[in-house]
Length: 191
Image 1 (tube, rainbow, N blue to C red):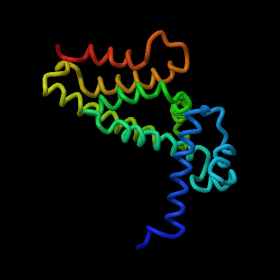
Image 2: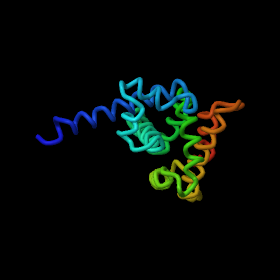
Image 3: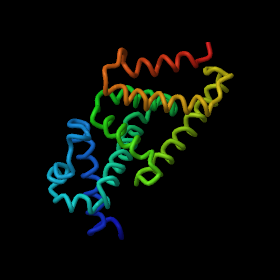
């Protein structure tokens, strides 16, 4: 049984442990207040040993963001469609401000085409945009979403709203981000 035992399996398990721990520590303490040295100590590794599993600090944090996305998909697996999943993630983000800080900071930095995670964000946004547009079309066909709304445009706006609310949640927002997100969805529903 290749791959189920030995050094490879141990490496996969250790990488998963690192990501679980990083999600917890960053959610609690924030991105800026979490050092790779602290993460390494939390999983019983040296800083060099920790980075060995990812190649660089940037790739480690990209892997944390990927793990965050996967955890959200699992956590909200009962969401009716990608729109509901995104709404649930917006609601959940209020409980993980450190991960919101990581996402907001990293997504801004990765706007630079030379950033290691630039392609990750391009692929992430394209995938989410396509899934949301498909969900909008399905809702339009079911008669529950404004039929005149352009699915790709609305998908892009929903992502922008979600990301913008993540940034603004780090400041004093006059309303709950989830309520603001739901308000836009209410405006788009076909009455």
